[in-house]
Amino acid sequence: MAAFPEALFTDLGGGRHQATEASRGPWDARALHGGPVAALVARALEGALADAAGPDDPAFVPVRLALELERPVGLDPLEVRAEVTRPGRSVRSADATLLDGDGRRLARATLVAIRQRAEPLDLGAAVLPSDEAPAPPGPPAAPSWETYPGPAFHRDAVEHRFVRGSFDEIGPTTDWIRLLLPVVAGEDPTPLQRVAAAADFGNGVSAAVDHATHTFINPDLVITLLRVPEGTHVGLEAVTRIDAGGVGLAESTLWDARGRVGVASQTLVVDAR
Image (cartoon, rainbow, N blue to C red; front, side, top):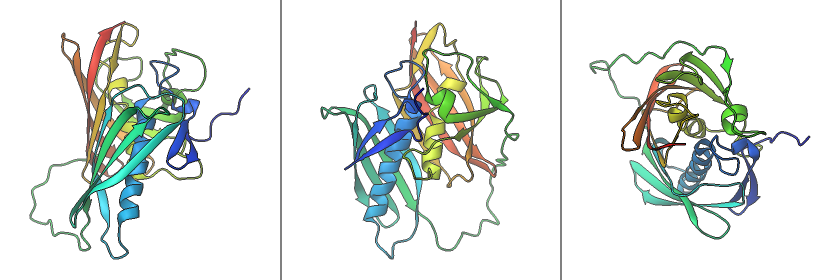
């Protein structure tokens, strides 16, 4: 029996990577889950911004990651290209493209980062909503449905701990998700990589129709963050809405143990099997 992968991707050098079976998605054994793809491009975008930063620059925090999945991403070698497109003093951004071995673009993404103040603002007079975190994570739960044998991201590379709902229930859910593997071997996942990997589960854990009768694949993922998430668990309060015309929208509120950290959205292509 082959050893279980030690990471989501193998670094081939020169911006090239190859996905392991632990990155596969639920729809097709030859195609990746969106979570590993989001985490990989987040890694490249963070690296581009870090490489362009000067020694005296203030700290910048990621606030928006927008990913468009243009073609299925497979297990063949991939190339990630990232560059800074806005080298501002208060706001910076970088763009990334994900290419297959033939140079075809599979995905593109943009990361926006805002400089962090050296001295915190005085918010004593601010009127802020109460954003206490949901209940603590429940016991681990695994998907009961399996579309092919062998490792898959949603089953084997992340841990799910539901507070409300489950894989077997249709409708809104609250799920604490923990990434179990690094994006690349030997590197600890950054908070952005963890939240990117988790946020792509919004449509999967809050399905409005049964997995057995419909597909609801997201061609995009947009994550907006108020602050850097803390800890290894990312909480999703997710709900999916669909229209009879075959369009859906999954919306997730993102949490860590301190409280709300942001939101994520996915548009969906909904079809009958």
